Length: 456
Image (cartoon, rainbow, N blue to C red):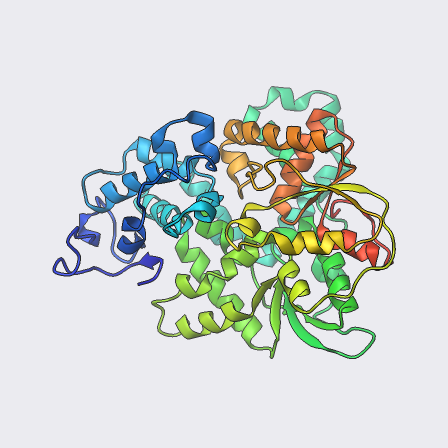
């Protein structure tokens, strides 16, 4: 049985009777948290020490094992979708740190995401209309994303600083002011304008790889994408960036919109499997983690289940891929003191922690300082910093305090959400520390020109 279940199970093989008709006001066809995943939890408490929300509250209900008990009670029909239950599913960052330490291997991330889907389908998500607008109208279309990005870029260039100087945002609700401060700068040129669909290295082609340009990466972190492609080309890769690719669907799934996530997943499967690729290389931790879950997401789809498994085998985080192919060693010194933040969906979802460090340690001249609590969530968590700002900022303060203690000149972050969140925290703290992508630093080690910035 997979991580999700959308089928009724007979009581003769399922003594707890986890059936759809046990769910209060749940329409047919939605995801039900899988019984086997729920009962695997042995309630040992190993997760407590790594759960960010439990550390904020010290409340059992705000821990992974506490949330599993809540999910189990809802699944058995003993608990309805109470405001407290909804709040706990929303309070969880879905950082999946609990999965790293869980001795029973419970896939908690899929449990909480399935519960969010149930809440959304029951019409009880307080952010329902906002999420539906973005996940079903904006993100599925690169055209609409770019249109909004162009408007935001014009605002950032011509209005933002003026409005800040005159104190305009002090007149607005705090949420609008925070959104203005948290939104990353829009790139001057988008990835799909500076990168081609088919890019070949100067020498012999050793690998043929697909590249996901992303949705927000495409418009907000175009230089990150350019640096990644340049590194791949330097490692003798032909890079294919299919024009008909779409958002990976991770933001939609993490926020309880499986319908949108599945639709996007199918489009990406068609786009990438149309090419004969050795790997599909991704430089955003959240995207690579989710695309590796396409097999579970579409396990019951008669047309796409096998295709999803085929694509899943090809998906590689860029650090993972470079280490596997024995990447070209950089020879140009980069005289910088750096530290490294482990993105949750790289360290916990994909168990990739050594590979980025191997790449960074290979660059001559770098002074590497390990970051205390490097795998602790920074509080970005997709749109968490927007919808739960106060909780997010508590976690960010802890992260930024740890970064400041290293006295590093650069903090490396391999996920765009983390990069934007940490940059925001450092700026507010008055720290002159740059945020940089690992591929930007490796590109510098190859002696290739780079802006050395944060993807703008």
